[in-house]
Image 1 (tube, one colour):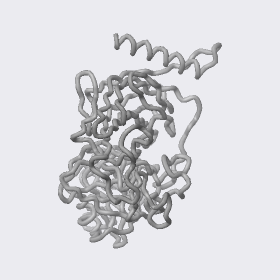
Image 2 (cartoon, rainbow, N blue to C red):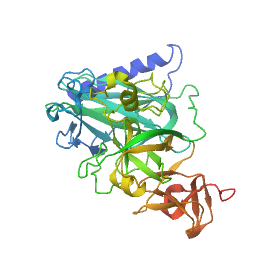
Image 3 (cartoon, rainbow, N blue to C red):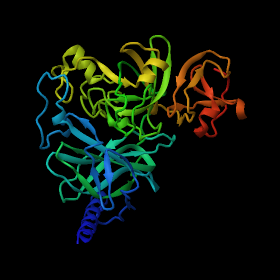
Image 4 (cartoon, helix red, strand yellow):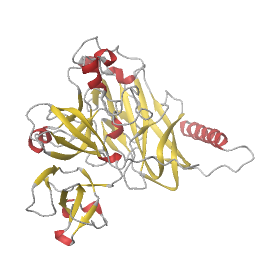
Length: 424
């Protein structure tokens, strides 16, 4: 009976969507609808069953309850508290589904979720699209969420047309709440007009305060278990969270001592979880009144913004806009204390990024030669921007920045990069 009801609701919602797109006398545009196999996704903090996906409170990443934003559950943290009460933490788990290829480009995806949501829980669908340049857009949260035994069409508006999309279920619940998703059906609308995003000539770059993450033995938001001397970063928004083991969203971090490192974004933090501060105000998820490039934590710490609190009501005790894993902090960048760094958000630029597949850190050299000066480090699973290639075969080098080169053998996914006009 539930299957018949679900199918009827899907057909009804699809009919409403089509009617809203085209006038009655015009032919409806071709929609692409598919059903996701929830058993085949990559799980982080959720358990997949034969008939559903459920939040796993034992392994899900915990955040203060303010992340639930208005739903039933524990109250916000006590004003001025430096750390959350462990008993009042909400947990978040992810199920990242396989990419879905489309016959026609889309810039809008509707998600129809069938879920059981006890008080204090929520389910959201994040969607992203593969750009013409080969990179992924950031994850775009859908604008509605499912409610208990009610199918609701939630929409994600992509920043530019895409012929391949990927979705991620986000399940959140307070300690006694275990949201459960039974079904996900999605509809891609053909792009009706050009929605090309204005891509910067270079990747966005800002100077922010970096702190050491530590937490060895813990689990990141994408399900990675943190090892000693690990190499990754955390940013305070899940919009740029890479799936576990991937380089989809990576950064270049440069310290004042002149050392730079390329690393993947594998965690969410510090302080906030909805602060994509690198984005312009019309895109930024929270705190659009702050200047682009200014983390909310920095504004709270220095200027008393938001009463000096983060999104969860904690008093901000440092202006951090990025967390660095221990190996990146100590070994790659040579830092001994928290410090100001320059961060390039590589996915925002025009160059396609490709993964470093070496099992060890790869030196970045100032010229395409094994004897050239080392000017940085590219860690395993980092995405590096491939601008061009010099040489052939085992002697080929990739230029990944101005006077920055790595052996092409360390980045086999770079493919047929264009030849560099000169060694520079």
